[in-house]
Length: 261
Ligand SMILES: C[S@@+](CC[C@H](N)C(=O)[O-])C[C@H]1O[C@@H](n2cnc3c(N)ncnc32)[C@H](O)[C@@H]1O
Image (cartoon, rainbow, N blue to C red; front, side, top):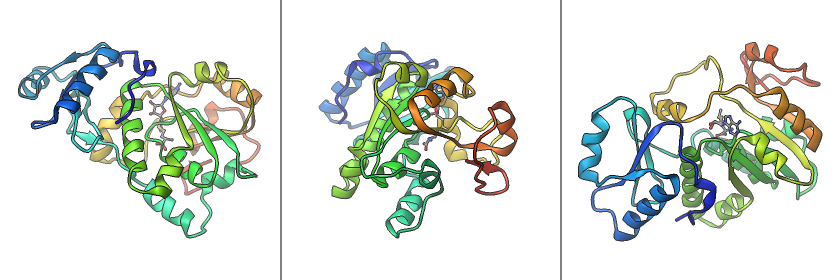
């Protein structure tokens, strides 16, 4: 399990309690208590948690499970657990020697490239970039989502040597990407941003919970300026109609009729 550290010592913007699944080991229960103390949240026993959650739509639960990947129920949504999603097929394609559009846009050269991911989210992009050989420092603003992703990455890392090596190249930071960038010295070979789409062209009930967790704030001109100052290249994943909010890019790559890099 992840070593709990001070980086989680911020409460999330939503109203959370921490619990564990029925029959969880004493170790998992004690981890729930440590996590709750760090996030300054209350702990509920499983039998009280469902009742508490059902009393108001604004309530949210983080549930520690046996396999190490917690489930989240922001605003009472159906339980959601971190998974590889589309990164699974992107990793398989990379393994088969097919180029990944994002990796190509980052134009990384050399084995030891360093990439900053200003929107870590579920770390799907970070995993693909790390699988291409780069090291990634990724920031996620929401501490609960950051915790869920870190647990997901650890679970993935325990599935075999290849994944362990990929995951070990990802350094997860909790915080606003501008603060994280300002706290770091040195340069990045590339920075990538992938803000939440304003009007996504897909709806997946499975992703509803994490969309509620994620911050939908647009990329600020200050963060973009800072990234340009400390990186060789900046790559932004957006929908075509959202591009007007950004300075004109040097290069545009279309993935399909709405998505661009
Ligand atoms: C579209 S998702 C990124 C998905 C990610 N690239 C992946 O592959 O899983 C955007 C994520 O960035 C986070 N976020 C939004 N604003 C942020 C900021 N200023 N600093 C750090 N993270 C931020 C959101 O909470 C959300 O998890």
